[in-house]
Image (tube, rainbow, N blue to C red; front, side):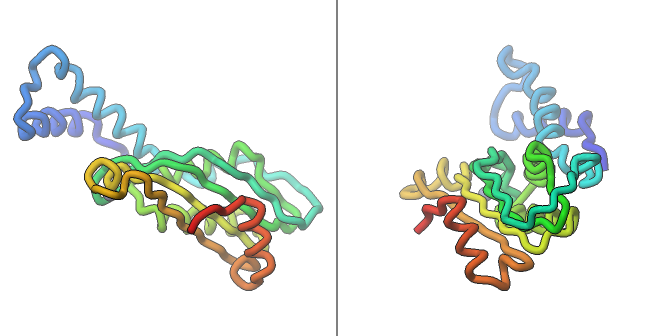
Length: 190
Ligand SMILES: [Zn+2]
């Protein structure tokens, strides 16, 4: 479903009026257009497929030791408030002959992050996509993120980091594998 940029522009103007603003004052004249373009970009993950992202970027590799990619930058929008949450994503997987190009893992994270999200669901979608796309024997994904809906509104929550993890396959079945993953990504929560 394509983003209806014209409609978002119209609604953004209405939104400014509802907030008590004057959408015709100099600083706001172009705001509805900017909002529409920004929102279309920030939700562009709805219009990107896994196939587009991983296209030709899966390589044969005979190793079956754990692959770790740490500190993938992540920016998303919480679906409850349409406010950003942002942080880092750490990914580990055990391949069975196929591995991803590293930049593709970042694009895969972007694809799911550029939607209205819950951090928990985002974490699961990334782990399942990796598991299914390259037939890994196991995948672990951890996301550490700060939510502006908490930081800007709450008290005593300004420094809180939400940590979510999703483990599938051998990462779920084997405690030793899970612990190796957590140690390698330098889990510092709790
Ligand atoms: Zn929120």
